[in-house]
Image (cartoon, rainbow, N blue to C red; front, top):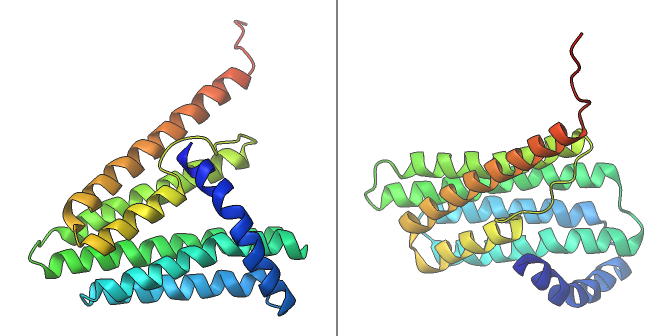
Length: 200
């Protein structure tokens, strides 16, 4: 997968940065929160029509999102609480940037831009929910397309190009397809592991 190849390429760079942060005594949760604040800033800036500033903040937030996990593993500070904080703030970050793009699209003269942004956000949330609910039932649903990394780069492309309409529609479509794919896979796995029904 493209996401796996990207992670394999980026991991040595992230490890080097993580060692530098660890030497400064920076906690992984601080990096997580910084990434969240940067994504909020990106959503605000794009909503105000400042897409270049938004793209810069979004790129930095993505770096933080990738770096906090590396720092947690390297420093030995990985914990369920940190993972929960990261996942929760990721959902808020998705909401901030997608609603900001929707606002920018609406400012450009598309009255239903915010509706498309809401539909895209719902798809992104459902991708994450399907995985989380599956893992709660003991299933691994990491496989699939349109992962968070791919969603991040599609949003960055929208910010850099200003092609909000087609890219937001594409985001919404792919997100809902990915959510349905994970849901269908979960149902197949659950049916395969459930005891066969017997006639009384």
